[in-house]
Amino acid sequence: MTVDEIMRRWPATIKVMIRNRMLCIGCPIGIFHTVADACEAHRVDLESFSEELLAAMRSDPVANAPSAFGESVLQEQGHGAE
Image 1 (cartoon, rainbow, N blue to C red):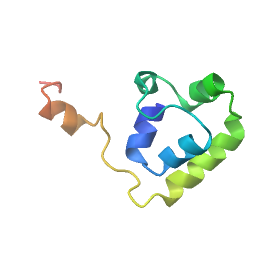
Image 2 (tube, helix red, strand yellow):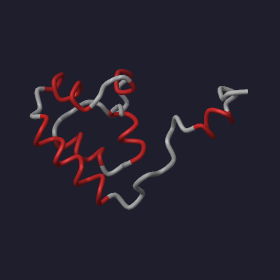
Image 3 (cartoon, rainbow, N blue to C red):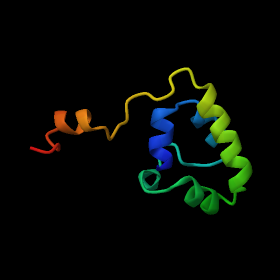
């Protein structure tokens, strides 16, 4: 899952990104970068960041919001399977 998708589905993770000085919010590469990619690019320890990210995901009150890339969204935009 990309960092963009994670932030969309679990908005509480945005604070984790900011706290770790990761510039993923609004970054056009965020739609391609995994957590590991982003940690490497920003020189952040993957293990500790992942623990912090998972804690934020578990405590997010709007966890598991619909995916920005979900099938129903793509069909509404005319990109779904015919």
